[in-house]
Image 1 (cartoon, rainbow, N blue to C red):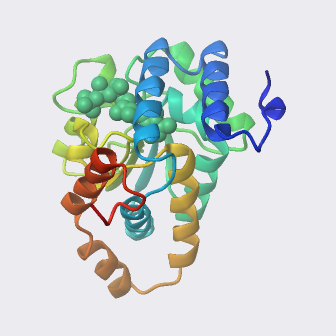
Image 2 (cartoon, rainbow, N blue to C red):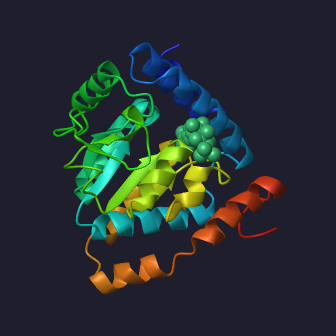
Length: 253
Ligand code: ATP
């Protein structure tokens, strides 16, 4: 079945589109087999969260937009799952927030980096970093730690969708402001992020872009206020509550 064959009124439309894109990603050499497992884990959490953006995630998405706009050197990290799922959406977010796109992989191979970079270019990306990474994230073994000197290494704010916990932790330890998009509020990635966005990247990336468009012209003081008022623990707790109680709104229960 191709994506255009999936009926939009199917009750599990989003989930079917996600599966299709990831499957396609694996076939094109963009997504790894590990990425397939990550997708399965994500789906389970999405199901428990009600397959929609909960209020606390929507707030985190706004804060993520404020951080990206305020940053001097924002970077969007792109792995095999993100590239397969949301290539157009990532390119649009990069354009609205003037962020760079960097291919950054857990299971790094030159072929897969090249396949992802080509895929992003086919979708309209002009500049893609990460093809020739000369710097390292301290504390990570060789291949897993490689980063671009002009990208993640020099970045002040990094957005990492669907990331492995170990690398998210090492990035945070470098002192960067880390925005993590992860459906699992218990994951180490989410727990280490300054801004944990507990939502599906498929919904979260376009939501951050919408907020960024709205916030483009706000003053520095206003963006500071949005950032200062954010309570990351409350966000993680609200998502956990939503999962445990299955409530219709994460503010209740
Ligand atoms: P930990 O962070 O606890 O170490 P992990 O590194 O083992 O966990 P992985 O399975 O490697 O976790 O990472 C994938 C993470 O991405 C999972 O937490 C999963 O819930 C999440 N995930 C998968 N698909 C999506 C998606 N579409 N949007 C957001 N998050 C997703």
